[in-house]
Image 1: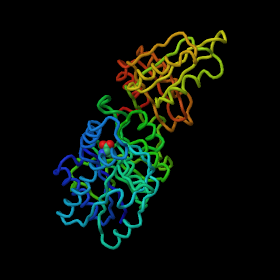
Image 2: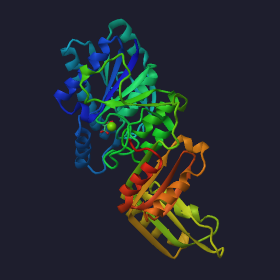
Image 3: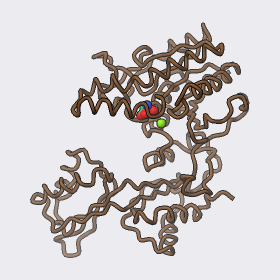
Image 4: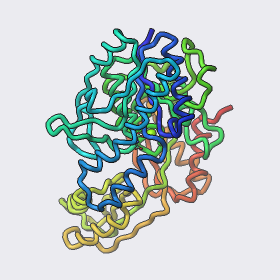
Length: 417
Ligand code: ASP
Ligand code: MG
């Protein structure tokens, strides 16, 4: 007997038929003798609609009331799933964040989970054999008693946090894909599903553009060592043997991964924009004069490349920002022109970032050098490079994204044979 968290995303609970399908997945595990806590998202598209309504009601709405509105999507699915479970003879009840309670910070719209009372759930597993159906994405701030939400995609984080709180053997993330792939299979048909991936690698993949899980949920899993299993909710519930190893991808500690590849995956993102500041003064305080105002405007800067000047006076500085922030970033820099001191501002929005990830890079030299050679052969120009211990990222022209990803996927031996 195991203790499981089963999390179902928006597409898996998109209508009553799909909620029935979810209930059958839950019943299978309950019948196998497991204790089950289910975490649900809002029905697909519902949260978008609630966000839109809040904006329509007022552009500058009260963040606490925004949370009161958008948290409601999950309340609906939790109730509906409990009803459907009861209907097929599974003892179940729904839980809102404030009922459990799931205490969070008071950063409305982007709250962090601080504490979850798992004891009550465990007691109910023992005494009543009752499935807990928990509304994801939401919690409550202890001092004010107000409802909070965790940021878009936050029910992944709810699920992992609950798994930690009840000491679950596994946190199953049921979604519309059947696992984590070496890269996006829509771009590279030869992409392979990974059996296992280390937390750190998944964290990079998720931050760098793979949209499987909310980044914070992976962080939390890593801190609490929660074994996270990504699997498909569209497999026939009864066709799965609850005692056999299911198919999907396990996100776990790297020590659990025996056959570690050097490169595990390739991520890419086209939501990037490049800004280059030409002939900027090369003196102390200039970087602060540039990045201070950007930070103050809440613009996330990613890659930064600065050259050492030849004449000791001026140099070029390039950085990237999310394309949505491109105009704002240019304005911010232009306004600070006198304080910074530069000649010209150049920029490009038709750029993409391609990132190669693998824990094996820690102990292997020349991994990135191979990529530079392979891309040069394809005539793909690299605009900027950043590296860390387990990944490197290349900024290229967006038109070459697919070609670059496919080239690198083959180069590092990731193609399905
Ligand atoms: N329903 C929320 C959203 O769409 C949370 C989630 O689905 O994880 O962002
Ligand atoms: Mg999601």
